[in-house]
Length: 326
Ligand SMILES: [Zn+2]
Image (tube, rainbow, N blue to C red; front, side, top):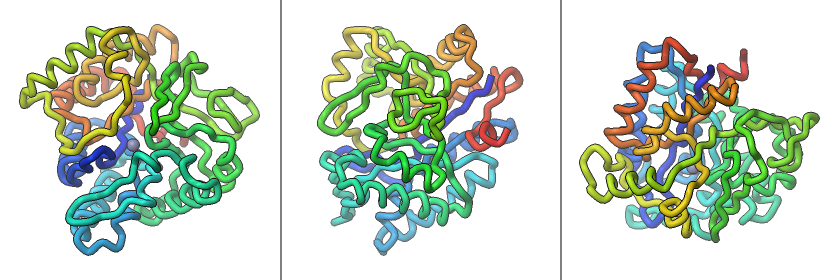
C-alpha cells in the first residue's frame, strides 16, 4: 500500500488569517520532525498566492523569507511540493498589519472572468516553480473548488498541469463560497478525465488522484466538538486564524452520517487507522490523506507519529513525485 500524506500549506481565509509562524512554520517543523530518519515523504500543496501577494510588502519581508526558507527545507528533507491555488489572493490587501482577504467574493477561480482565471493558474504555477526551483505538475484547488473544469481544460494541458488531487468521492458542499459536488464519484480509485472532473474519460489527459473518502458518524463529530469546547491544550489547533463558514455543514455532521476526507488534522487523525483498514478492504493500492499544518494539534501530531511508526515498515509513505516517477 502507498500512503500519501498531503498537507495544504496556507494561512486561514476567514476574518483572521492567523500568523505565518503558527499556521505554517511551527506546525510544519513539527511534521518534518516526526518524519525524520524514517523514509517517510510528504507532499505539501503550497498556497502560492500568499507568496505572490506579499512580494512587495516591506512589512512582510521577513516572514515571507522564512516561508521560502522552509520550502527549501521541505525539499531538502526529500518531501514534495505541488500547486495549491486560492485565487482570492489576487484581490487581497494588507493594511494595518491585517490581511483583507475578500475571500467571500473571490474564493473560486470561476468567481473571476475566464481570461483572468486562466492567467491566475498560469502565473501561480510559474511563480511557484520560480520560488522553489523545480517543476510542479499536481494541482489541488483551494477549497476543492475545481468545478467547472471545462473552461480550464485546454490551458491545464498546455502548461503541463496534468494531475489533480481535489476530488473526494461522494462529497458535496455548496454555499455562497463553495461550489463542490463530487456526489457522482463513488470510488477512491484514480481515474482519467477530460472536461468534467466527475466524468471518467480513459482518453482524457488529466489524471485524478482522489483524496481518500471516509464515512463519519455523528458520534465522531460530537466528540470532535466536545474536545474542542473543553479546549484542552492538546486539542487546540496550532494555527491561530479563523475558518471561513461551511454553511450548515456542522449541523448535518452532528445529526447524520456524512462523507468527508481522511485527514491528519486535529481529531480527524484518530480515524487514520480505520481509513487504512477500509482502503485495504476495498483492495485499493493507495491511501491519500489531506491535512493542513495550521490544522494540527499537539494531539494530532502524536497520533500521526504513532501511525507512521506503526506502519512505516508495512506500507510505503510516499510523496506524489515518487508515485508519478515510479
Ligand atoms: Zn487550501
